[in-house]
Length: 249
Image 1 (cartoon, rainbow, N blue to C red):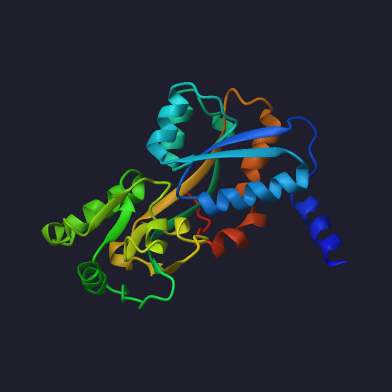
Image 2 (image 1 turned 90 degrees about the vertical axis):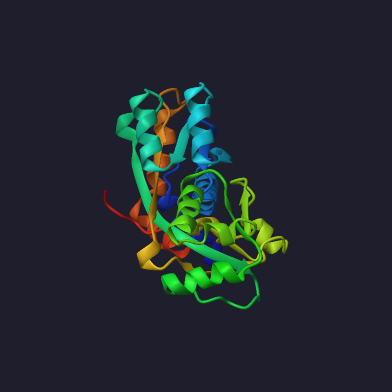
């Protein structure tokens, strides 16, 4: 009975669609867990196959500008807006998904450092042997500059581990790093890694996520429905579970 009710609820959330049997998403890494979950729900409810290719925002931007075929892009709003101006994304398809701050993750079960204040966070960094972060992308660039702002660039020089966007949280689970600093949604769902919190408000920055449909989408109607579900009111509960909060620009 519960399975029947769940299926009915899913069909109310995602109307059954006719048309394209496959949608391709190009997405930044920051919203990975949300994009995966919402795409899976859409796929199950509609029968539309959703293929997702993740990369850091600059790489996705280049691939789109170079002419790679796709149907939906999920990116930081400034990058998405640039692609709209370049004629790669339909202007009226832009859907704001939400925003998220920079978070800190550690190995599951390890002692939890205090990061509640700027001074505490600074101490936690200086105590860690290795701190991973994405070498490219908005959160990685921000963190690298934050280390300079905190005045510990020299002390952290041999402790920092700049990593590829698709593999920076996982090194904490593997034990190669004690801590990872990255957009918080990237930490959720990685086995063996625990999210301990966001950066203190005084040090925090917010990174947005937005979706848009390619001007060359095979089935723009289906692609737009998928994009809209990611930023819908019905999606808010799940998005909040992975640290993404809705916002108005």
